[in-house]
Image 1 (spheres, helix red, strand yellow):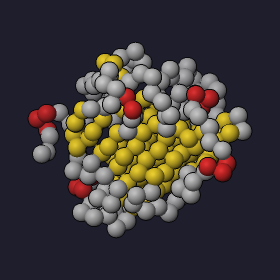
Image 2 (image 1 turned 45 degrees about the vertical axis):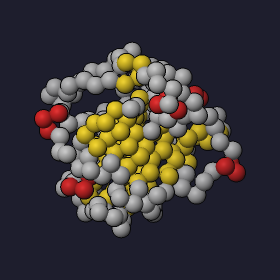
Image 3 (image 1 turned 60 degrees about the vertical axis):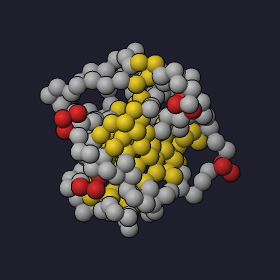
Image 4 (image 1 turned 90 degrees about the vertical axis):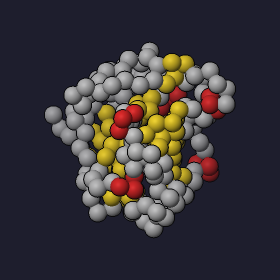
Length: 223
């Protein structure tokens, strides 16, 4: 099986809101965005103009893997929370998502590259397009080689600036690695974010957009 990796490196600064757009139907469709603040915190989410349904949930991971069904999760009914699909990873390790406060390793203490989150995208036709004149300086517009039978996923990795490695996703047949360095952060080491867009196994496209991330158990939390 042939395999292709395309890699691009971008000059970025803290506070830049970076939108990832793919070309579908000769229109640019932003599907994901992220931003690194001056203190090293990361904010991100799918690019949705409206949210009709929001679910949240958690499952234990056994032997480094787990299975999550599209129908799982509890429906969030709070209208204020429904207005935003944003997830924030504070540099301290706190995670704010759908009204919950969770925890992971501190971004200030990273010594090696870690997966920050995984995004499973609906088909690009479900995302609103933007006109060419609305494209911003920090938008990343990709002529991604879409396979109608293989859904796109996005893996976001974070690493200390001196310890990043290029990720190859298996069993993907095509992927794009986007590299974003962030220097001069306040109270946090220099970081590199690596977003990997890929498609692999054949299957149906997800009915929703999903954002998945690992958290620490209660007994492991660092307050």
